[in-house]
Structures are given as C-alpha cells and as structure tokens.
Length: 270
Image 1 (cartoon, rainbow, N blue to C red):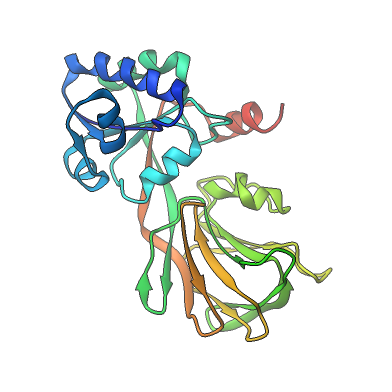
Image 2 (image 1 turned 30 degrees about the horizontal axis):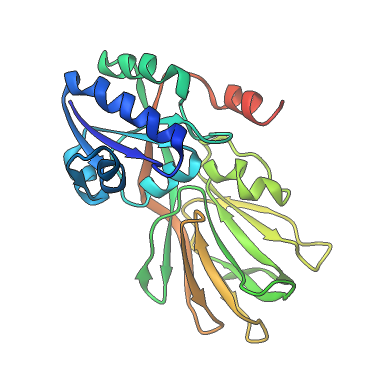
C-alpha cells in the first residue's frame, strides 16, 4: 500500500498524532508525506501533486480545513482523521485513528463519492469546490448587486453581502448558517443561497447539478471577490464571466458505514 500523509503541522495535537501515524505505517507500505509535515519530522517531503500521483490512500490529519485544502489537488480516496474542531467531513476522531487505519489495511471500508463544483472565470477553470463557492463583497458593510441566471433564464436579481453556491456536502457548512437546507449527499444538486439579502423574497434555491449557473455582478457593486472552500480567493468585477456547474471529478472519502444522518445527529444536533 502506498500512503499519502497530509497533516496540519501548525497544531501540536495534529503534529503529534501525525508522528504516531507515520511510525505505525512504516510497517504497512511506502509513505509520501506532505512537505510541511515532512520538514517537521526531518523526512523527505512531496508536493500534493506527487502525493496524488503516487498514493493509493491519502490520510489527512486536522480539521475540515485540512481536508478541503487537500481536495484542491487530491483525487485519490481520503481517510480523514479529526484532530481539529467539529470535523464534520472526518471519518474518525484522533483517539480511534490507529483502529481505523487497521480497518483500512484489512480492506474493511467503502469509498463514498461526493459531488464537486466546476467553476470557470472568464473561460479559465478555477479549483473545483468540495463545499462551496461564494461571490461576495470585499468591503465590510457594502452591498453587492448581482443576477443569478440558470441555463440562460433569469432566476433572481438582488442586493446582498453575496451568494453561496454549495454542493450537498457544503449544505452543512456556510450555506447552513445563512438558512439553507441540509441536502443528502446522494442528491445531485446545487444549493444557491443568498448571504444577508436586502430583499424579503430572496430565498435559497436547489437546482440540478447538471445546470449551468451564471452569476452576473452588476456595475453598481463595489469591490467583490470569489472564494472557493475558504481556501482560494480572487478579485472579480462586473466584467467577470462566472460560470458554475457540476464537475466531472468527485471527492472520494474512505467510510466505514456510518450514515450521513447519523453524522448530522452527532455533529450538528447536540
């Protein structure tokens, strides 16, 4: 087995756990450690591109941010260990990490595929989104004005702090905080949710994943930006052509059988 190892080395808890996991895995195959983690343990490091190319399973140690950072590049199955906060996307908590790895080594797991979003800006493809892409005002207390166009048909024109386009995975993240519904990951859909809209009738929409969505920023908007999974951002303007649709790529997670509904009860309803 070839293992990729991505760790949030800035957190002492994650780093300590990463060292334990590295030592454990030495008996079970070749390890390709991310550069920053490898530097901490004085081992050879690899870029995320090389980890994706060479690994069979990629282990992430940290919180959801570490997973989302990895998924900008990683297309191989991810076994996620939570050593951060809520860890909604993670499969096991840190205290069960070795037990979980033994199950992976024994092949006692399945792969869950999650939808991602494809985003193009002026014809150039940006990183895919696992959770969401937001188009938002770059200045505090300033409203941006935009139109949402779905398959060449106008859905909404409004002013707001911004708009979120979310996968079902992201429906339990930023989109949830602005009043969006929770979507089962098996639903092939995009959730469109305005952020603090200045219009009573502005409400979240759920549209098929196959639909092409164009976000048109209106000229009277001030500075605006596009943000993908909280990891990537770029300035945009009323001249920008922003297109969002379902990606041909998916996020692959190692799972042990716990259902999405169990995860919602454990993580969100407590």
